[in-house]
Length: 73
Figure: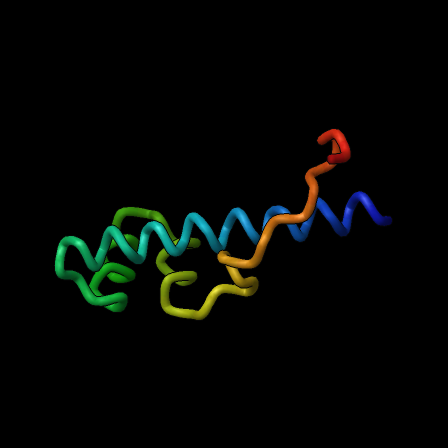
């Protein structure tokens, strides 16, 4: 179960990172989160449309742990 839990943690982190980039891109185009969500939903990007309206599940700026397969320092 350990590797599965670490996988889910990695997916949560990746999704949060991606969502924050989409939010920053929307703001660069002077769109509010709500405007961007409506546009994304109309274009079938429903997962990210919902996600940008909520805070991320994880802290995207939290230091990364050593990834599986990486050598010890």
